[in-house]
Length: 93
Image (cartoon, rainbow, N blue to C red):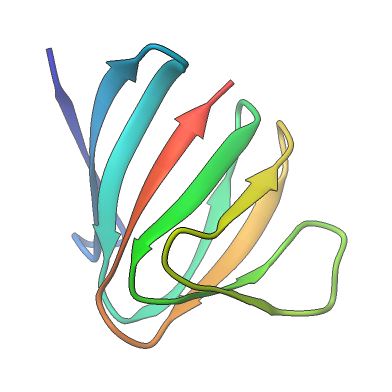
């Protein structure tokens, strides 16, 4: 069955589900800046909007648009900025 998640006072919400590749979530972020931590390797794909991301061990911010994916290793933190409501899919491995 599905599990719902809510973070940052409801500004980030997701629904967890199982795929043939493993556990995943689909979700949406309201305009804002967020910091996330990982407990597995995460493959995050933007499905609408734009995410500006600062990956671990980097001082640079990179923009990811629709259907672009970035990867974050296990047990790290990364920062995200969105200037409009933005949706994503995250695959956990």
